[in-house]
Image (cartoon, rainbow, N blue to C red; front, side, top):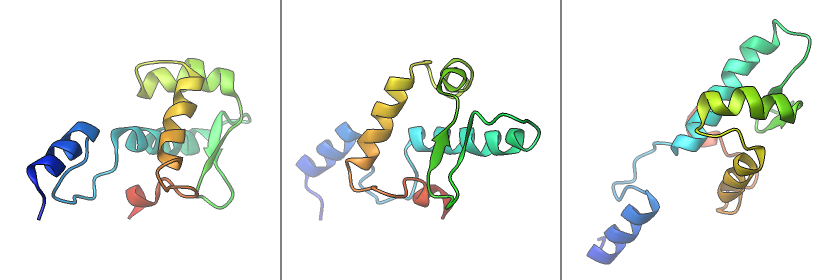
Length: 105
């Protein structure tokens, strides 16, 4: 049974106390970005970003174009370092290999 203190902590860090399976908005937006780019990559000679060969991660092939074109479309910034910093927050919390597993399920 969750105590009031536990509920307050979960609210502060943005987690639900009811154990819902909703991915974080950052992960959803990143997944959507990658899926849209996969469709566009098939029509282009140059890839900006794509899923890796295993499909459990991704590669940014053109960081400048990714920052200038893709990031502002999905996020409120065009700072590649900020995007990487946000990714690192998920890897530091036990999602070492597959951060998109919860979205795909």
